[in-house]
Length: 254
Length: 248
Image (cartoon, rainbow over all chains, first blue to last red; front, top):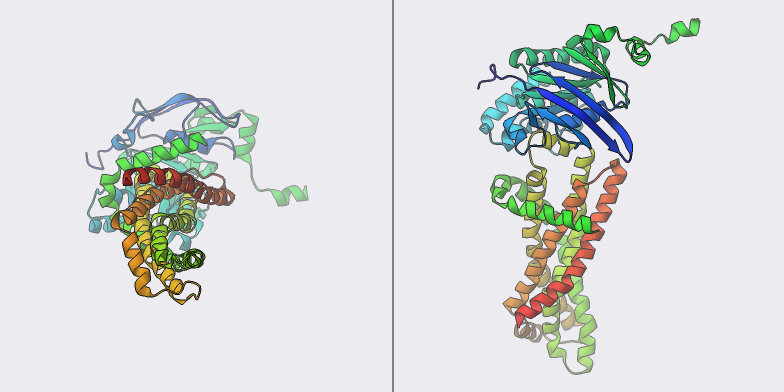
């Protein structure tokens, strides 16, 4: 299968529940993501978005419920060998002992998928794509937060994933780079039908790229709908969340 | 405690199963070997020189009083290669290298680098634990050989120049040669290999289960060193019993 024919995977989440030290963090979460869809999970900080994302890639085990990737449980042995799944972490999670180039090419080099010269070429391409051309030999400690985020995105792109999970992909990015990242998410989705699940509280990003948006609060999904449907939400918290703006000077005057 | 021991045994088993993959990780093994050698060799030699010296000083005077100075080489030789070399080097390495392993892997766990490896379908046991465990299992027995040689030499210096013992180099080394054979050295090397696996597995296990930021990393480092030393000292007794039994 070549990269242009690759299609994304479908996700089904059923009755997902998770608690830490007796505190319920996810409460009976259920939703479906269609292959090739851009599904955005949006909600205020501390609502359980990132924990949900970690469950989708198998980094956390649920107390109850199940997650199916193309009708196969996320916990089935060898699932990660059969499906290419990648994640862009909020903290970037670059390996600090490796250079940026080694980080970006890690998937290819560790799985011996390409010869070293080709890996170098692919790494250079991906870094250029995210605006980090020539940064191969830098260490992560020499990069700013935004640059680390872009390097992490390049590392995820190298996997050529069928499912790509983003945890706050635009946090720490300037508005121009945030737009570039949003465009890249869209481009990947259009070109390779990558299924994308994006966790964010960036409203511009959510409404700019989402096919559907899930609103999450206190570990429960309040509603799922198209961006237009979500804009018309009647839930007071989400109305405030979507309308919140910096009007400090005006409120001072009034 | 039993849960921890169980997890460490599982980690050892998984690493053992991954041994055929070590060739793929040879660069990381060499990096770790260099790190261990570079960080420890000089200090290990200094420690061993003085351990050998103290041993000769403590026993030498007592032996000389009873006219048994000719046994000093044998006593220092056997003590160093069967007990002090392996145990002291293991304790030293658990503090010097085990702590570094726990800190490095612990920091990777806290800053989600291990999660990132998992999402790239890279097994952290193969990528992080295997090279470290193999490297320390090679390095510790080599360090023990150095430790024995330097310790014997330290004992010789004290035996010759301390006025209470005052025997010749020839007498010291003749005594050592007559009392220490290859099996005695091998006995210590077997111990050191077991200790190396314990240090590597305990330290990597502590690192992998680190949570809670910088304080968590500190806790993991302390636990890695303390648990390694406790396990080394307990195992030393049983290993000694076992090896004594095999010696007969």
